[in-house]
Image 1 (cartoon, helix red, strand yellow):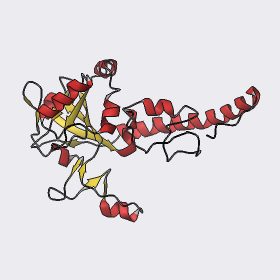
Image 2 (cartoon, rainbow, N blue to C red):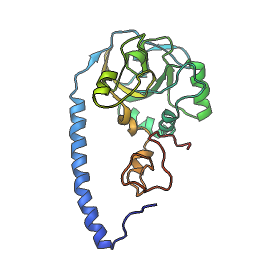
Image 3 (cartoon, helix red, strand yellow):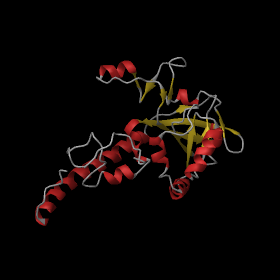
Image 4 (cartoon, rainbow, N blue to C red):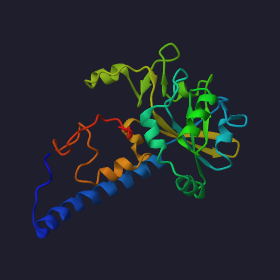
Length: 244
């Protein structure tokens, strides 16, 4: 296993200071990107989406739970599956009550939505010991409209704002079908609900913060795509399944 070079404290401090400059650049760039995200226009939601909740059927506006903002995590859970996606599960495991409380103090609700029937969702949620709100979109267009359930019989498939043809032009062969992960954000203004943002693929890593902590370590995420190579004794694929 190839470990970092061993140097003196003074040499390490020089290298660390150089890296700090790059980290500050990244922080400023991230702040600028977040500002651009807030400047995005928004789209009014006029379709009457219905969701099955633990006690009753609700509309999209009711998922806000009286708050101004709503973050929907699109959890991969096909109706034919008996368990949820392992990668989505890894992120959900780290959604603590404290995180929910902190979002609530900023007038924001976090809720999970899956295509699976509510009975399967409730059983899986109970087995995992999760407390966050989780709704079923079974029998609705919601997952298809937000491009996390892909079926060419329903609409032309796209993921992360790209079609299969666009991925092919980038040299990537991806079969866009079935369940995919994502996160969508909404804003409520009076009786009106607006879609402000959606994020997919690696943009989802911010839920499941173990990755960000591992990025600060010498061995990293210990996945096969990382540099430098040979840093971990055994590497995993780029799927955040912490059960393996």
